[in-house]
Image: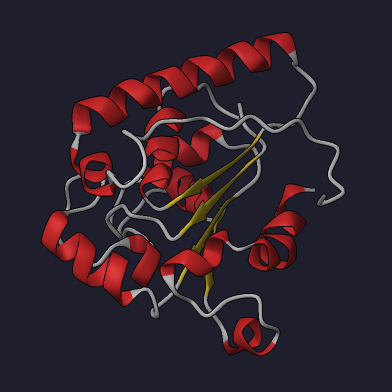
Length: 193
């Protein structure tokens, strides 16, 4: 429907409908699923060496994506899209950035206070941090990086919720609005080209 020439592979990693707290807190499960995702990506890359691989993760799924990227060789995937990320704002993105040929694009919103403010403060993020998550505040760029790490972090693009998104009706900035078809079509699809 988006007019993109890509195959889509939906990777199921959760414990099932309505078990979002278990999804956030079961570290061993998510690490196992991240290994499975990394293996799937390596296999796909081996069979399709010239096809770009784009990864889109949402909420706790962004942690899964970031964990999987750590196990991949440099430049394995084309671009990564993180929506409403339920990981800590200080999460070290260097390994994920190395595995990504172009950029990691992270959408965050100060309007996501209930899930990524209160929720992650009370129940924790996927990487077991208790506080406001990166999907609320954006990622913190580390200080005192060497030149190589500075170059890596130049490939992190942070997209905050904006009044334009509200005016155009693509997002209200709440947690579920980044899953809506109109948001995906106007904000995410352009990054998948």
